[in-house]
Length: 162
Image (cartoon, rainbow, N blue to C red; front, side, top):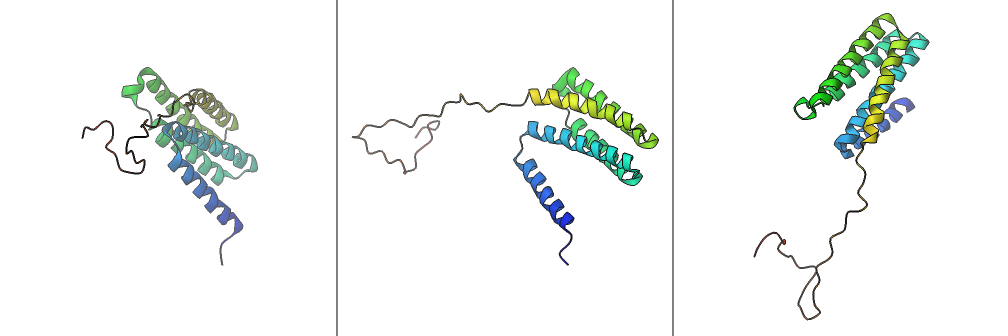
């Protein structure tokens, strides 16, 4: 009547992922794409070991879609220059290897792509923006006791002249 426990858990997981995407900065979104591809490929390996060929194919397809429509599509070659061009070629290589792995049921090829994803994600993690603890908080305007300053009254921004 109300669905299974599994579908309920999946709904909460989906909401959690969607909330993470909404709240994420661009760097975190790329990290989430790497993680999604890694999870899909680990699932593919599990399905391959279990002999579940249809689910293995779905998991590999999901990883290819993340690589092509997420990681690869996010590259800006006009800004990223040679690095973006090299990553584009590497992502294309990964997708092609995964097609071969799916057709030939090759776990070692999936593991090769997983290792490449891990290497790139590790480099990506190293360049993560750090919260700047040194950013000073702007000081409140100083006013003499004799002035008629009202902190709650609307004021013109300092950039605008009255």
